Length: 202
Image (cartoon, rainbow, N blue to C red; front, side):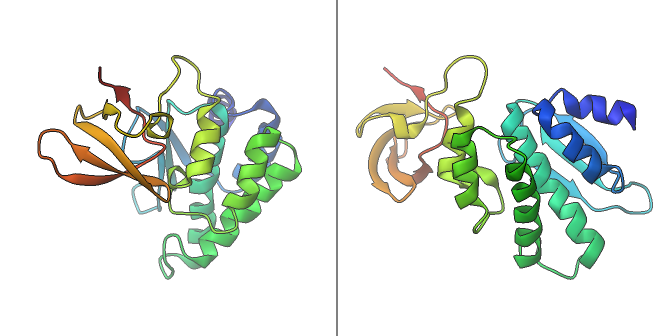
C-alpha cells in the first residue's frame, strides 16, 4: 500500500498521515483523484463483484478541503461495512460515523484554529455535502492556492455577475445563506448560495 499512501500524502496535511494509515490499512479502497467536478467534491461507491470500495476526490481541493472530503467519503465506507444498504446514505449512522472521524482529526490538531472552530459546529448536524455548509466553505476557501476567488457574498446588492456556466445575474436580497438573484436574459429569480464562485461583470 506504499504507493497508495504516497498518492494521498500529496493532497492532505502531512500530520494527518499517521491517522489515515491507521484508518485505511484495515479498510482498503481504490482512491481516484479526479478532475474538477462542479456538482460534487467527492463520492463513494460500494463494492461489487467487479470492484472493491471506491472513493474519488476532486484534485483542485486544497489540503484541508481534500482531507475533509476524503473523511466524508470514508465514513460512507465504514457505514456500508456495518449496515450495507439498509440505511439512508446520509442518515444518523453516517452522521455519527463522520463526526467521530472528524473529532479524531480535531483532537490531533490537524486543522488551523479557524477551521477547527467551524468544524466543531459543522459536525453537530453535517449535511450531505460539506459545500452546503456556508461557513465551512468560506473558511476552507481561504487556503486555496492561486488567484483569489470572488464569492457572491463579497458583492454588494445590485452587482452584476456571471457564474461558471456563463449565465449572468443581478444580486438581490439575502435569504439565510442564499441570495435572490435575477437572471439577465430571462428575468427569472433564482436563489444562489453566497459561497458560489462568481465573476464580476462590468
